[in-house]
Length: 270
Image (cartoon, rainbow, N blue to C red):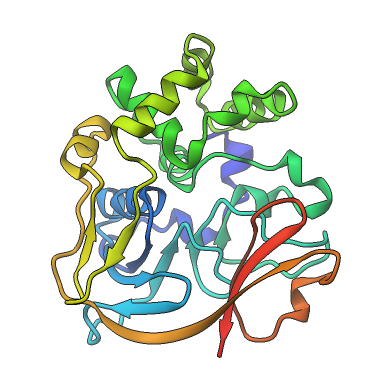
């Protein structure tokens, strides 16, 4: 990641103390790889699972502060790739590590956003070596369909700009030599859009091919083996910017993200 961009991230990101925090996983590959990166770099392990309506915990005695991974938290530390402003003056959690927050992206300039994954952003921030194989590099771009912007003439310039700022010129070259269909096939082969869920017994489960993905990324991907129990329930909702001018109009926010230029999704305290 270029120095000018990296220095704009919250100070907690640069704290390399080992085993200081836990992480909050939510139910997709982007969050799981982000959690794996936190463990690989800092030793921080998953202790919470968030599914937008509920928060589950594994070890209730663990008092370490938690970092949300691929979560647009309204309070507390989190890595996030979402657009979290309706208007440019909306409050932004100062502990959110998020390129779109740094660049003042809102519904008004929505298509100037970083449209890559949280995991790719973390990979760049921590200066990790790209996977050794071409397939591994492609899989990084498959997460959150982070390749799509390159193949749309409306967004290619912005897409490449962010990859350059993140120090990933090599990935731009890879995209130039591949077709969109190559990435779509890889998403299907590796089931990258498969969810992670809590089963009826309280254990996390997924059909993601974790062993194959671990080899491809060069970082171990694994689910916690502990049993998870319910900690909190939340209200979830959706809205439209035509009816809500600021996210400050929503009481008790836990998380908030635009899901398109005009639509948003949130969770709040019941």
